[in-house]
Image 1: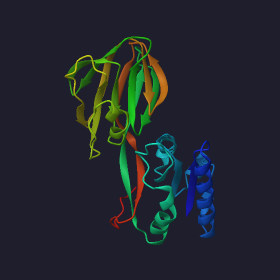
Image 2: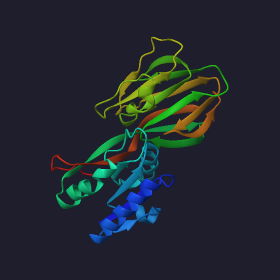
Image 3: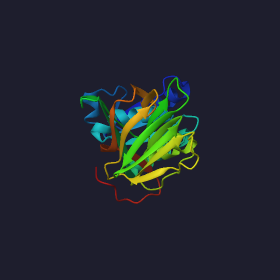
Length: 260
């Protein structure tokens, strides 16, 4: 098999284990790649990450176009997205490669399109976790959001649009629910001015959110990375992405795998 390996270069213990796994896989006649350029990504069977949620998000976004599944070894502080403890990696790989004891699960992604007032596309990005508009140099921002024709204004430090995967990240810390199924998105206001503004859930197969107006200067971030500063005259649509992320889950799982 052709297997990619990425690790957090700021963590010596992550690098050490990643290279040990590389050597172990090479002994078993697998091809290993430590540099994941586009030409390599086209042919990889899966990628193993050795790091925290930030590395997983970065790698998931990089491989999304190729439908490359991820096995995630936790070297992070929290590790919401990681599924393998460092001490388990050789056992998990043996179960996966030797016993075929794994499944591949799909995770929905969320996409944002930003246009100027003339309709010219300024940015188009998708995320595994969340898309966030948060205040910059102002006390609060107000976002007018339309969902299925229903218009509401939300005021606070910002607004989070999260997937099921992202429901255990920023959205949860802001008081949002944890989603069990992958069929909804969350709208959650950060430090809302109106305490009655509860999380808004909507089925992800719909055209999801249209942001009509942002009052106050806001920064737009996709999976934690800033992509734009909003000044209030942009046209913003947030919806289910056509791309998906694929996670490998190993051990005591059904033998039937989801088709890519």
